[in-house]
Length: 484
Image (cartoon, rainbow, N blue to C red; front, side, top):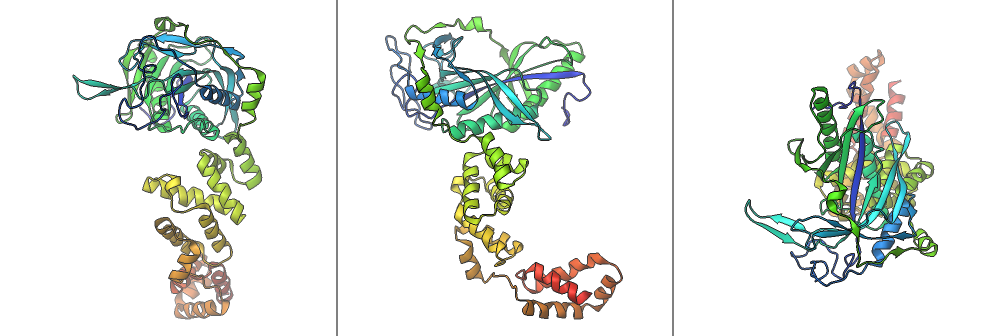
């Protein structure tokens, strides 16, 4: 498949909708008191309710309802005053009741949106059709081709499913939407949104149609995508596959396909089930969920500043670019780290540069989380201040940063221990500059004849002579004086 846009000059457009399952981080499961916890031994957190024993009755977890309301309010949804739970039937080993408790035609939230930024800075709202609560299924563990085990720890864990309208038209928009939604649930504190642990997982529905045609094409669902980058790759591949199939006279079948990230291909899993195959009906064991205005307003009052709100504020208050603000606000820990640094050093631009270039680069290279980083906000703020005051120059600061990351020492301590303080004395630097000019008469002659680029030779020589500790501003000033 080609690297450029799969729709370029094809005469087709893509219509994309996304269903995201967010696992909520309540203490207990949605309908029982079992621990809602990842990583415990298999089947350690199971009771008669979540294992589907006959005669048991589910009891709705109030915190799950409030978390669902928070997600709905944060995305501009209408909160239903009356909603209900249904049974969705399917037969898999990881679903012990042979049905899943979910919400069908009366969900808790409807008609919201998630704002995203497009290439070039324009804004777009991705409309949400609904947000509903449901329980998770267990997990099948395939030991061999002939043996599978079932872990029911995950059965009954609380989920919200967030379903978009088919408003997304490219892999770029899909990735922007997923990033923004991921940040929203993190900011709300309703989920850790850890994709590796399955706390934030999504299915993508894709169809293509000739530009101008109103009727939707045949929808294909993509599953088993566990990163935003893979989502973009999978969408581009599937769009091109569908366009090529149609152009060569083939038929697009409504099916579920799995994404193979290693080979960068999708492959058919099964034909897509229709809603009637699930045989939805109202769950008789759960009463109607009634939500009054007072409850809604109580939950609304607890909403934090959201990532898209922080994005705008960072640009206005801290004068960072849209690109910088997008990265800084994409993760709640990173946004808090940035603001903590700025509060101390009062230099947002330099703080942003150090975080985006050095800090994130270190995290990526060493595969560590920000919370595991030895450099804390007050330490980075001190480094910014040391450079701003001229105590060390930017080149030495890079070495100090590396030492801070390895040892957790404050920059002032590293500077003192290693004698890294910048040489800013004009008298001391002038002696060095005069000697360099005197030792290189031929280079001086060439520079004066018009070869201005040789100025860099003199600056480099002075920095080498000072072992990188010379103040480059003072050095350049003195060189201009003695070379003029």
